Picture 1 (cartoon, rainbow, N blue to C red):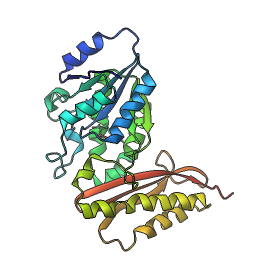
Picture 2: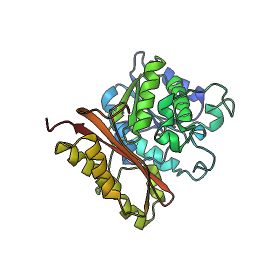
Picture 3: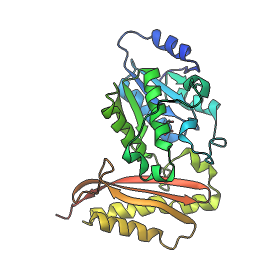
Picture 4: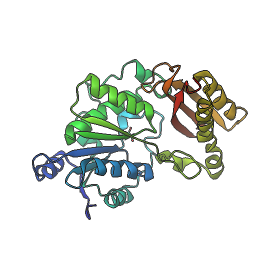
Length: 289
Ligand code: PAF
């Protein structure tokens, strides 16, 4: 674990930091929007484990404006830079790259962006038009700027993970994408920077979401089909007026149609008050034979 984590905010600072590394140093990047929690800490730990003590871990802290639609929470997105740097230091990150918007986007409205394709218009993309174009564009830029050969992302934003993998494959980007399992609070709620917006009552109600997903997992384990999984999970949320469900679906691991057997994914997003809760779990279908 490094005692000191260096912080840079300019492209030249980033280049200078990398120029000091011995040739061949394996580098990983963990892109974040700050407001770091234990889920991010887990990503940094996973990065360190992959590159080893001789490798190098960069955490980027950048609230990317192009992935927020008008009217979303860009201005009030939680920001906690000093404690973010502490988390990075505690987890042994070598470098924090915290650029300004002007450093990342040389033009306020970039002319060339990355089209996420049809998958970018489904699920989160249907609720947040343009979101994944912004995500893929900034992730490609951060990969390019850092030159990392490993890119770590959480499974919590599963559609983001699938789309980034797809971008890397379709555009031959020289980076390996590593998905890291979701970190949950003791009561099962998936950690998210936006959980700070939940009132006490909403926070209590929010555990219905992971519970519904768990019921889906149990239904699959008992031999249920994708349809059974969905209806079992949905019925757990029925009558809960505090929730508005944006979507709940069963897919394959690439977000294609649910398979009859093998690995699937149960994903949902629900609104509670002003907060959108996103969660997903792996399910194994067709186990009943
Ligand atoms: O998951 C996030 O925090 C963001 O979407 C990411 C990957 C850092 C891009 O801004």
